Image (cartoon, rainbow, N blue to C red; front, top):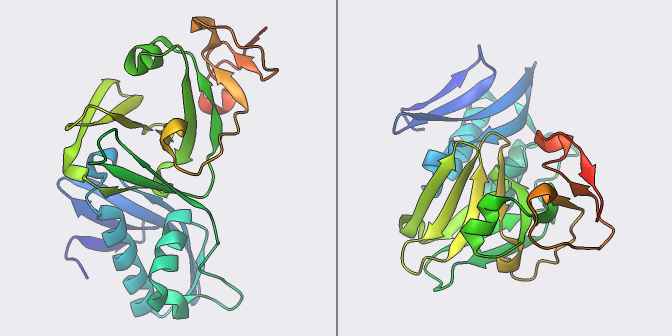
Amino acid sequence: MAEDFRDNEARERFELDVEGHNAFVTYRKSPGAITLVHTEVPPELGGKGVGSKLARATLEAVRTQGRRLTVECDFIRNFMSKHTGYDDLLAPGQAASTNTATYKAGCFCGAVEVEVTGKPVFAGYCHCADCQAWSAAPINAFSLWKSGDVRVTKGASEIGTYHKTENSYRKFCKVCGGHIMTEHPRMRLTDVYANLLRGYTHEPTLHANYASKTLSVKDGLPKYSDLPADLGGSGETLPD
């Protein structure tokens, strides 16, 4: 087990320190049992395999403590589906695999590839001025995934990052300049651009930042002036 890994019972989480940053898995303990609730890896550590290292150390700690395991965390569940040697830790009636879909995306030249698992939390179209400038297009088709369900599988060293604000960390390939995704750390969500996801069917449910639109879209979907209340916006809607 890594020396920089610990069970912080005061905060009810397993912690891993890497390069001055703290990644963690929150849990609930009861006599002889543990439930893994949520995994969080700071965006600064993305693409470095920290999530997998943390998951492995966490499961080894569960084994050492002799607890029966229940998993609510999608990231841990996905890790276990690929590392079945930990299945014996599961409490009776628990299943490691969720049979969730996996989609892959890449940059323009193919130097960078990412993978997402499950389904997006929100999907729609964004009309904000920043997305227009970043994509050089009037509309960005977004799919927001839990950040723990997004993994860089190739070319992590080739990823560049630009953040105009702390709300959005935009990722691009340093080889070809192709755009890849935008991390939203405050929401714990990552936008992997829908047009890049191979085999993924975009099912939009809303338009965001419609007050900034340069192109009207009459499709019957809700048009939010900024963002839905669930995403920290005003929730105000506008006509088509």
